[in-house]
Each structure stands twice: as structure tokens, then as C-alpha cells.
Length: 192
Image (cartoon, rainbow, N blue to C red; front, side, top):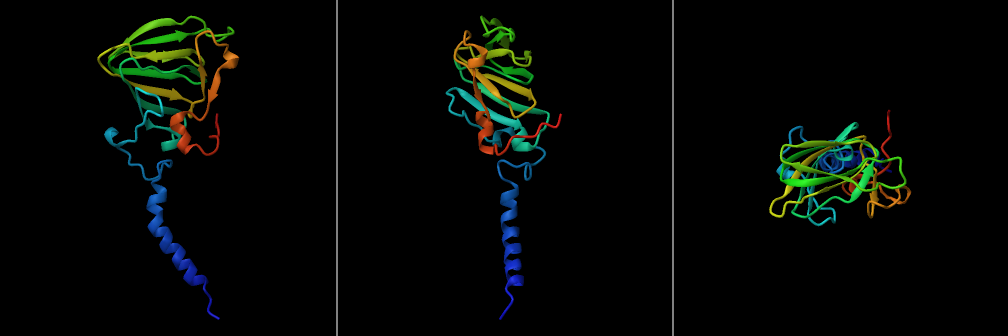
């Protein structure tokens, strides 16, 4: 009787050689991503939110980032984020367009309350502290609002509010968030 083990090992090796490039370059792995990438060639989606274009430029699940995540988001005229908060810091850089930031900083009350309203514009930047409830609107009727967003402690756990008077304890947790769902397997271990 012939020993098939060497033959099976050879088949496994040949199969690996043909499949490895595909497996290592999967959308959800850090292997296979070039160091320098063209933003126009990166995957983008609206994730079911009309008026949004989201691109993860550097992400925890897509690229292996541990401390920060960087997004490029474009909002068509009149579109906005949901009213939400998250347990991470967030930095916005407005590349083009005009809009409004709604920010409720009372995290110790029962609900967000009435937000302060701040105009945002091209070449402006703003910071959202941990757990501050906020919303970004494109209030320009004629042009897109394009922003770079940098968040700490990815992947982000987002708490979504129906309105500004919804109690904090009733906010709906969305985790993983829409752009992390495809690559989310198991919770990322927090090394801190």
C-alpha cells in the first residue's frame, strides 16, 4: 500500500501557495495593505445612511491600529450624524464645506439636554471629549461637508440617542459600529 502523506502534504503546500496571497490580503487583515495607499482606491460606503460617504483611512480592525483610528467622511447638503456619544476622544478637521456642531457636555445629568451650537467651516478643527453627546450637521445647501475624524481607543462603541432629552441610560449601544461590522470577529483586547 502506498503512503499518501507526502502527496497530500505536497497538495496542501501548492494550495497554500496559490491561496496565501488572497487570504493575506483580505479586506479585514493588515497583511497585504501597502504602506502608501491612494484614498480614491479605498473602500467607501454610506452604511445605510443617506448622504454619508465613509472611508476608514487607518483602522483598528482593517489595519491593526491599536490607539487611534482615522476616517474621511463626506456629508451631502442637509445630512448629519445621529445624536450620539462614545467612550473615546474625537478630533475633527474640516477640509471643506460648512456645518454645525451640536454639543451637550453634561454627562452627569440624566439626559444630554439642550446642546450648544457651534459653526464649523473649512480649515476649522474641534475636539469632542469622552462621553460628550454630539451631532454634526452639514447646514450648507449647496456643498458637501468633508471632515477627517480621529478617534482614540478603537473600535468605537457608540451610544445613539433619539433626541436630546432621551435619558443616558436609554441610549442604544451600537457595537461594533457599522464600518467595523464586516471585520469584527472577537472583541479587541484592551492592553491598557
